[in-house]
Length: 297
Image (cartoon, rainbow, N blue to C red; front, side):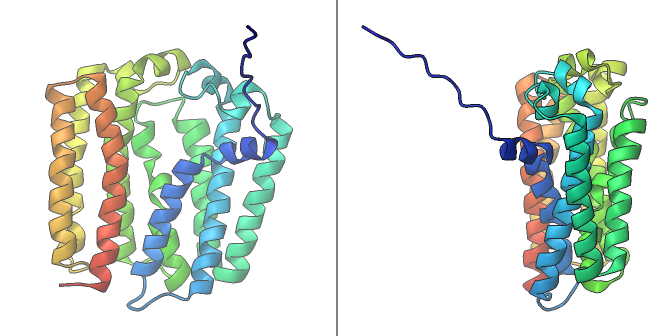
């Protein structure tokens, strides 16, 4: 009897370039930007601006992640979680990545400048510099507080979306940025906790590696408390109503339960569940803001 061994089909070149943009993370960033667009106006925003801004922000965000993959290709190769990325495998060269990032980043800037407004283009470009250069190349390899300090660039999408529609970034937009900024440490440290061996091999000074598990677990709990308080600010300043308030209280109760289990009853499975929930949490929280905006009670 003859047996046939299935040979995995190598990924297409297009899928490899797509992977450079870290599409799942990019989708979350763009989602938060789109929420910012809808919150920036009482009615419905101009759909043409929404489409152009979404594409422009998506392209520049993808370019930032491509630069991140380029800068961390050797680190990615040492980590099980990232070892299959195209640059870590050597499937895409440095020059190909540079050209790809320049093309999509340049296209994104052109779209934002010509079809949205210059403010959005410059804010998005500064965010690109903040993530691709300041966070990836300077902060991440040098301090265990990298995700805290560098978290501002990852928190910017709602402000970018708001600027696209309103051509300004008022206090309400910065509140959304603040929420993501405070959410980032417990979200990322949950991942770093159960991937601590990977990060130890990478050489990056992540908090569980430099300060230990218990220290990190306690800080996940502290930041989760701060997050719960921060998410009440939109209601406190009358930016949102009861629909958002009730949603935020429920979502925070679940988030805090996960954080408490990380702090007092840690297992890797607990951290995995907390990390997964943190992504769902942010999506539902921003969706609640949108629903509340149009059905404010």
